[in-house]
Amino acid sequence: MSFPYDGKYSTDFIEDWVKIGAPAKAKVLAEHGGKEFGEQCTHCEKEAVNVSLGNLLTYPFVRDGLVNKTLGLKGGYYDFIKGSFELWGLEFSL
Image: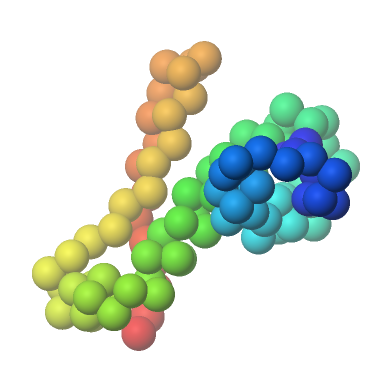
């Protein structure tokens, strides 16, 4: 959530990797912008899982597997502070 996308900072790979989560960050700022930063980060971590699940749908073999019900996609979030794990499925219609 705090990594700037303004081009002032450069590493070998982190910018491209972090940009994958930009849609999650935008959604969290729109829906939870008034909440404290730590809570925004938690929401962003979970939403980034949803973004990754959505990105998997860009692969034809993944879409085919889902349509044919030979593949299921699950998202998960591990909270190491609370020692809890949340698991959710991808709900969609094709």
